[in-house]
Image (cartoon, rainbow, N blue to C red; front, side, top):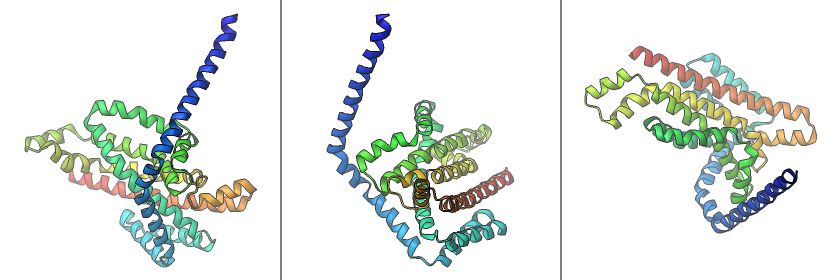
Length: 294
């Protein structure tokens, strides 16, 4: 009986000592390297702030025209172009334009970062089974650990602001593009690869000319999921100083403003639908093009 009473107490003491050690080590690390880490992310902050200012200073009619142009290039569908224009006109009409542009800025920067970081990692995973086995558990942890947990070390290092929120959004949103890039390259037909080898293609040439082009539909599915997950993090990112549609929603939750929360929530849904449909349609067009080539 003494074992069952003393053992949990020993475990609690060990846990407290471990927690104190980890907390002390991380505080010392933050004091020593926090300023250097913050300086490292200054160019990223400058890019995000510049893009946000550009979107806010550009006349709304030009922004909507650009969005409609991108929607047409991606989908070749007048219905989607018209729906995108109506969605952004309604967002502006109901006074959510500035918050919407701030959200578009952070989603754009987050997507660019995830593509630049995620696709090379996915390629490495596709070319090395050992790398895949090493990285997959990390991706599982990034997708399953609650976002509030990894916000703690980010806040301790960088404080409250745009960059910590952007990093948190990227951590949450990057796994899909890594996974689907890896999947797309691994699914490339072996006979096609053998044919390229027969023509004397090197490993790099196979990757650039065969594997990546044929994997593009799957990669774009990863981009689509990354954008959706980034939008899902907008509200949580607003808790640590990121401007956008999440701030009014957070204020609505705190003060029980139903209409304010619903309107801004629907604005996020509208953005999600537009981005989702454009990327999906573009992925389908690439898939059809690949089928015609075959």
